[in-house]
Image (cartoon, rainbow, N blue to C red; front, side, top):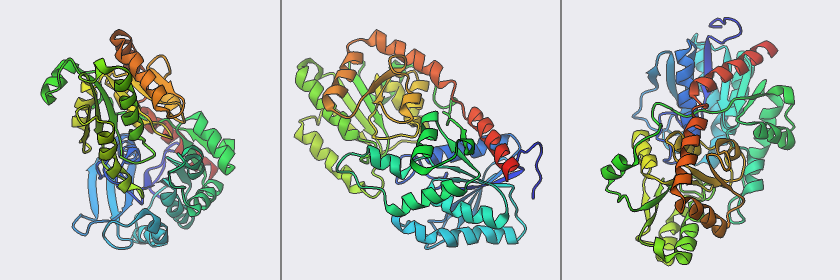
Length: 417
């Protein structure tokens, strides 16, 4: 063992098998999980905890070990081909991945605790924790049964192997972290988790990157006119994130309000992702069918500093997801002082305070979404008030707080092991 002080681990093996914290969020399978792992690892490193983040190697040209901060390393593990692999094929690589990590233990590298992220990593984490005789902390990020319960009719069901894997992880993990009390209840309801097994660890927002900002300056930078009313979507272009809902809502809005046709713009920033990545191919057709080529702009995902500027450009940020365990985009937007219109579901109920920092919409009816957007677009003073409230709300969710809560969860796991 590395050595622990007051039940704080000296070194943590963090597992993110299917996606690397080095990847750009919003591209491919990279998203909020990548941000979470990256930020948590760095904040733990800043508190003196060494962190090895293990991810599957997908490019033979990348180094095996990348030092990304004080005491923080990303270790790219050879399991399967050094190339992208479809997510449905990754369960077959779990045992090989775990063995390659254990090979490092055989060479003298040790850890006090394993923290796995997402079900594929959890399966590897079970093997590692068992063989290393250390506790396992697991973070679901998303759950198959919750996603299936909240999906649209034309969305793919999560596979049975995932449900089975998640059930096994819940039954054997020492501690499960949940973003919210609602997520904790879902772990109990859908997977039989024990109340005493769960630690509430809210995610954070990078308050150094995302903060209240000047809209005029940002619009001048991107050539966006001050007369325009801007609705912004940020996220992967996949059914779960539902950018099509905003497209339909804008169509509804300009249909009922011809005066908005020359003013209203929807900017969609994101890239295709997941098993239904071709789904995004239909978005340009939907835009043309509605006759909204001049109202809707689709851009590839941007690096986070540039993303900050796009939040600053916006009047409203829309988050129409079918499910979110929390909703980092909503928090980032609020941190920038922008009101959020989001689905009344899952963790978005915590990220967005209905009537205080934005508006929560029940379901995905474009008429209801148009109503919510119209309400804020017609009352800019109210929108700015919600934005100011949002900045105060987001300031409570720092990644340092996430790291502190995670260390508390680690302490519980070490005591119970």
